Amino acid sequence: MTQNFLAEHYTLPRQVEPLANRFLWVSGAAAAQVPPGTRVSDRYQVVAPQIWFDLDPDRPPQLPEHLPESLQPYLWLFEHQRHLPTLYALVPLEDGETAILLERVPLNREGHLWPSLVNALKTASTALQIHWIEQILLLWEPLICQGVASSVLKLMNIRVCAGELRLLELLDDHENPLGMVNPQETEPASLRRLGQVLKSLLPLLHPEAAAAIAPMVQRLQTPEADLAESQAILRQAWQHYSQQQSLTVEAIALTDPGWRGGDNEDSCYPLAADLAESPQPDWIAVCDGLGGHVGGEVASQTAIAGLKLQVPQLLEHRQAPERPVESLAEQLRISLRIINDLIASRNQQDAEVLARMGTTLVLALKTPGPQPELTIAHIGDSRAYWLTPHLTERLTLDHDVATQTVTQGFLAYRSALRLTQGAALSQAMGVMASTGLQIPVQSFRVLEPGILLLCSDGLSDYGLVETFGHVDVGAVLRGELSLADWGQRWIDRARQLTGHDNISVAAFCCQLTEVAPSLISPVVSPSLELPLATATAQEPKPTDTVVAPEIVDRAVEPSFNLSWRTWLGAIALAMLLGAGIGLIVPAPTQPTPNLGVPVGPGDR
Image (cartoon, rainbow, N blue to C red; front, top):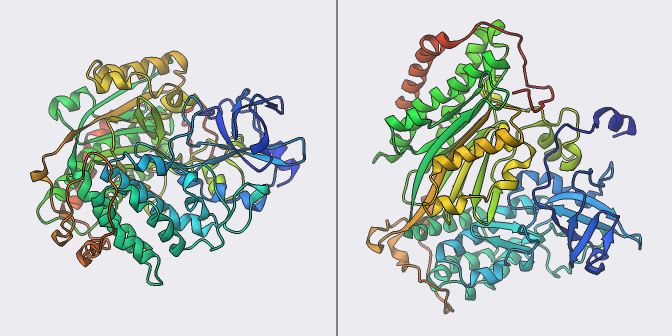
């Protein structure tokens, strides 16, 4: 990349995603020696060893045109940003060394580190203990592929906060990037080494948790180690112990055109009229239309109308005695592809009027079954956040040019945000054939009470959620503030502080209640004889409990069979598009297509 490229493509943007937490973790041997109270580069205040505070976050951070190869994993692994830190800046020090500054690290709003995994395991519930260990195994494959699996072999590098697990930094398996302080084990990173590390944690677990995973840990240390098998065993163990708490959800959705008024291209569910028909919906959604007020409004309404047909049928089908072979994620993708293709077909029929319409989408549903889980899917830059009184966690990654540039290894995130077209969407519903649509679907485990917030970029722009996400959450959870009033406060806040775009909010208020032991389903094989979890951690004794093969056998490969309900829903939606929705299309105006062009605050 040449200086001419930088001069041509870098501009001072109208908006850059603000720094969510101005406290940064700093890697590098020399940086660890900088004493608290020092000001570095007339910008960063050292508040504790390896914890710096950015005094001027509005100024672009220092990043070179070409990153050292040892730091490339921060880019390639960006899609795992919920668990991994993001490269923020490289700062030269007086002794000629370089400090690596990282954002999205396990630091709270006061600059204190989250508890270490080792310390948190001692007081965690059985389900939470198993959940954290499973997260480590799920990270292993992407980390080992990038040569940074040592990041989960150094236990003090792993930090946790309720259900969230995050690493302080990425540790190179072969060498120390830029002289980073990281004494490596003599044995290289391997499943055997991972098994040895997990074995050291067994004395910290509840006896039932240790008994459930000890055979898996032992197997990891053998030549027959199978990562997928180990992940399946942990998944089954979590499904069993998580049933001790039942999830209940309350849903609302609100939308507002913003202070500019006029047309609203956003659509969401469930609005007040929807709640009158179905007071306890199991799903929520937000769609942000693209293509001007004609096409954008039609596209977002079409998507919501399609979801109203598809999602209830999908959930009913999943709860039937003859449960489908397909995974819930795959069934959801099939439904969304059908809706996508119907919008795309409408584009071809009315191209002049609808101006290449499309829509973003973020959807959450209560996962069928006794486990406290939500399933989240998204396309575009509408987002999902998990909010508690002490934590604001972004769960989705925008489908835009900036994100695409990072994940392809070209630029660090803060540099990519400054690209002229950095905010342009890389995909949306209805503007391409479903065969080219990548639909991330994730399972989110509710391990403490909180609020799942879905929103359009009219709310998420300018870091509004990151700044105010924790406000009033406790009042809602305690019943002192209604969820509807909480949602209206978000609308009012966005109108007052930004208001440049349509504003939409949908939310689940998630509460957990204890379940009687007699009501817990035998998810795992009865031969395991797993006892119920105890209230506090105990010192388990070595056990010879063997995990039954049935646990692993239950992990079935998904097939791709469309049910008759799915096709019936598609036919009904097609009839709806041809009849009802078509009647609300207003007279055409000047089109403003969004795909492939910069998306500014007022473009949608």
